[in-house]
View (cartoon, rainbow, N blue to C red):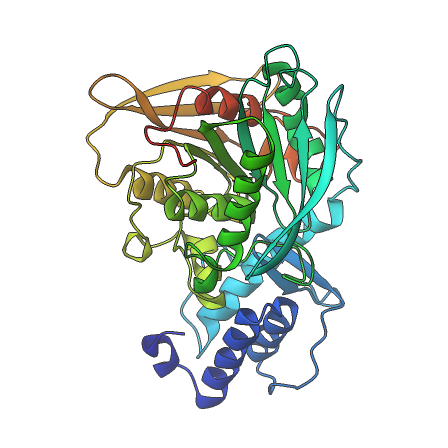
Length: 401
C-alpha cells in the first residue's frame, strides 16, 4: 500500500489494508478480500475470516454478501472517507456475481485422436501438475520432426481440462500439428486457482510461478521433439496476465504471446493495486520493459466488466516498447456473432509484430470458445485459431535450447 493511500485513511483502515496485503502475499486471498469488505463496511478487523461465499474477480477472490447484494455505481461521486474504495469494491462484486452464478460445470476436453497426458514438474519454488496434448500426427512418419509448442494458462477457477475444452485448442493442435501444454494452478497456491500475477515474487524470472511455468516448458522441450524456435504462450484473464509476465521475463524462451482479457506485466504489486488495474487499467508508469520485442496478439471484449478493456492497450504499449510501427485497422463481423476491430501493427519491412482484437459487445470470456468450457463466448471471433495463425507466422531469432 502506498504512503499516499495510507495517509488518507484512518489508522484502523490503514492497518487493516496492510494486513490484507500481508494475507495476499501469503496466498490467502479469500481471507484478505473478506477483511477488505469488512473494512469498507466500517467494521473492525476480525481474526476470523469467512471465505465460504467467495467468488472470483480475475486474479482475486471477492466475498459476496448475498443477503444484501451491493449495487453498482457507474459514476461514483465524492463521499466520506473510504467511499472511493467502497465504490470500487461494490462495482466489481456486482458485476462478477451474475457471471459466477451462471457459470456452467465444464466437461473434460475431447482430445480427438491424440493423447492428453498428465505430469508434474517441481523445482525450488514448488511443484505444479500439467497436462500435455500430443497430436496423433506426432511425426511418427517424419523421423520425430520438431513441432511447435503452445503453453496455455487457464483463468481463475479453471483447470487444464476445462480450458482445453473451452478453447478447443487440442482440436486445432491435431489439425495443425503442435503440442499444447496446460500448467495447473492448485488451490493451495491460490484459493481460487488464479495465477498470482499481482504479486512481485511472481513477476520475476527464476523464482515463483514464472520459474515453474518456464520449467514445465523446458522439460517438455527436453522430452519431446519441440522446435525451440516455435514456442508460444497464451492465457485468459489471470492466465493472460501471467502469460504477459512470462513473455517479459523469458523472452529468450517464448517466441510470441497471446493475452486474452488480461493485464500487462507489472500492472499490480498488491491487492489494492490489482483491483485498481482491473477497474481502471494499469498506469503505463507501472509497467516493466521487456529486453526483446516479443510479438503479441491481444483479444479483449469492449464490454468486459471484470478486467477493463484499457488493459489491452497497456499490454500492447508494453510489448511495443517504442518500436516504430505502421498501423492498419480492419473491421469485421462474425456471422450471427460479434463485430470486431483488428488493429495490425507492422515494422518497416511489413512484418506484423502485434495485433489487437477489440470484440464489440463481448464481456469477460474466451472469444469463439466452446460452451463445453467455462468463461467462453461462442459468438466469436475464433481467438484460438487466430492466435495459432499469428504464432506460426513467427520464429524466434535466437531460440533457447
